[in-house]
Every structure is written in structure tokens, then in C-alpha cells.
Amino acid sequence: MITEVAKNWDELTKPQNLPRLRAILKPSVLEAMNKADMEILLSLLPKYGPLRGRTPGALRVMSIGYHAHIVGTAIGSPYEVDYVTRLHSCSATSSIILRIPEKCGFRGFGDVPMGKNLHFLKALSLAEEKKLFSVGELELLLQKIFRPGTPNSWQWGTPGGVHEPKGPDAVEQGVVELTEEAEGLTLIASDVLLHNQIFQSGNIPEWHTIVVMLCSGSPVVTDGARSEGIVEYKSVRLAQAISEITNFEREGDINSPNYIPFDGKILQGLMMIDRWTRVMI
Image (cartoon, rainbow, N blue to C red; front, side, top):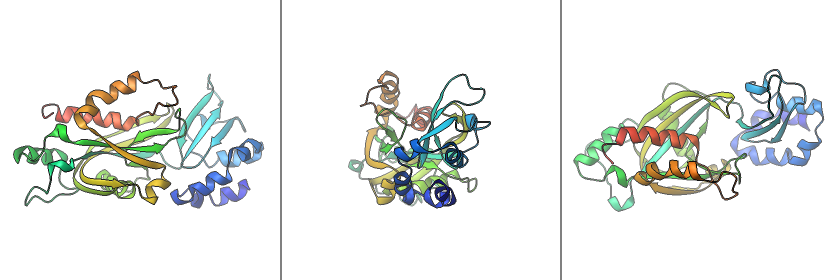
């Protein structure tokens, strides 16, 4: 069975086929695997961090699909490894979606063309000039998404995720993610907030690109969004998000089954937006 999984790995790890992969590699199958099968499965995972120089069979794949939960030990590590890693990529693009509330009755900036080429701050300046809406009225759009490794397997995330680099246009990648995961939104303006290297889960190098997008409309939970583990959307006023979300993150009980953490890229993006718009809010 594992040999067949390895042979069809690229096909099985496509978003639309992940339910099938999870059904094949159910917990009872993973627990029953011998060392040879485990090595085949581990060879499909990224060769970073504790996976490099591993002892055969020392690391166990607990769950698998879009993410893999790895536990065990590794050569040179003084502690047991326990982390969730991405498959097949070390690059992630996320979009901080700020939505214009419907009550503002936004119809555009007149002759100014809207879309990915209109810069975020330029759009805010135009809105302020024309008295269309204030920055503090904007809403941060969040999506509840399945994330193994969190206390109750849910996290408040943003449209976006893993991708293989396809070129220098990070905004273009953000537009792709927006289309795939948040259908129903109209893009008004955008800009790159951040592009830097971090170490995911403390040991896996990953490039994070955060794009801010100003949108209007209401997102729809499509079949494509559901295949990525997204179950619902909610919105929080930007001023409230900046002042309260980081406090909630700090004071929340991370061991509580009711605790749903925020994606780290949301917090990074909000800090950048706070710097950009401090005088406007």
C-alpha cells in the first residue's frame, strides 16, 4: 500500500485528493507501518531540520495530508520533536484582507482604475480625500481553517498558503489565493507588506510573503475552500483587531479545547498595517 502511495504521491497531495489520502493513511495504518514503510513515507517529506540525518524509523508521521504532524527524536536533538510541517514547499504567501463595510456604499474612486495595480495606501488616501470611508471602519476578514497541531485543530487564518515560487510578483500570487479561497470578493487595491525568511515550527526555513488587499463584497465558502479545510468566515473591525487580537493571543489559554489561535502571519501583517496607518486610525 505505501509503495502505491509513494508512486502516486504528487497526485494524492493535490487539494482535491487530500480526503482520499487521509482515508488511505488513517491512524491505524500509520501505527501498523514497519520501518521500511515508514522510511518510504518519510522520504517524501522535506529534508530540513530534524529530518536531515535521521535514524531510520526514529520519526513517526502521526497525520498526513496538506500538513504532516511529526513526533519522535532526531540525531543531535536534545529533546523530542513534535511539530507540524508543510509538504513539498518552503514558501508561503498569505493575504491580509481588509474589507470595506457594505454600509459605506462604496462604488469606486471615479476614473481611478482599481485592482492589483492600485496601491493600498494610495486607495486609503483617495478614500480620505473623497470622504468615502475611514481606515478604522475597514474590516479584517478571517477564515476558520482546519490546522492539525492546535488544541482543537482549528485556527483563524487568512486566504493564502503554500506555493512554489512562480516569479517576483507576490501580489499576483495573492490574487490567485484570493480567487481560490475567497470567491465573492472584489479586489480594489493591494501591496506587499512583508517578505522575509522565518523558521517554521522553530526548525524549518520558510519564506513568508504577506500581501495586504483592500476588497469589497462577501466571501463564499466554495468547494475549493472546503478542500483547503476552510469552514467559515468572520470579520473584525481593523481598529479593534489591532488593539485586541494581540492581547487575546497573549492572554488566551492555549491548552483550552476552546482556544482557536490566530495565524502568525495575521499578527505580523497587523503590526505592519499598524505602522502604515497609525496616523489614520
